[in-house]
Image (cartoon, rainbow, N blue to C red; front, side, top):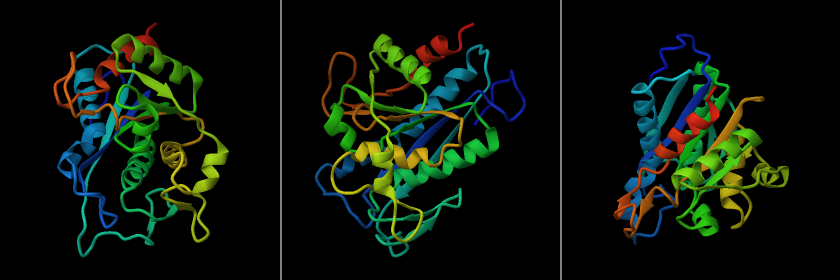
Length: 255
């Protein structure tokens, strides 16, 4: 995707990353059939990332940027990856797959690594319909925000309030990170047990973010699609994230 014309070098101020699972059956760890037809919305992170880059290309900016999306499908087949498989990530970290329905973090891990290698960003913001667990925690009114930087997190929170695309900061901590340790290889693709699934997913992603890079992960699983309409949105896709980032850019990069 496109750089800002302000800076032709590949050292950008901000990299936007989007998960684009165009249909997610769960793979071999197949989801229940009820409602599975709606899993076409699992590319919401890629859609908002593409919309952000289009928006930025149409306005004047005082910073450089890039965007990257990973487009896949997650389906059962004779060649599908299986529970128990070991997958070598682009970064070289070996991942033990315990649940094939935790595929989005594998996609994001590789495109975060690749994007940071190519563009060397100061800031990474990723968007992903990543976990059902974030919907249990926050419902459909807030996206989950995970970040390693207080200033970045605060600006995104304030923009969320201003635009009514609200985000709520969730914890990152070594106690959650330890749940991802595998007895066989570097890392498991899910945590231990049922609890804290959105946090362990974010901890998984953080292992692929370069040191000293400011990073925010927005889990938009609850906000990217509505099963019923309201004043602002009809039933279906909401486009959550575009107006949030438009306000954030004015807030964070203003001089």
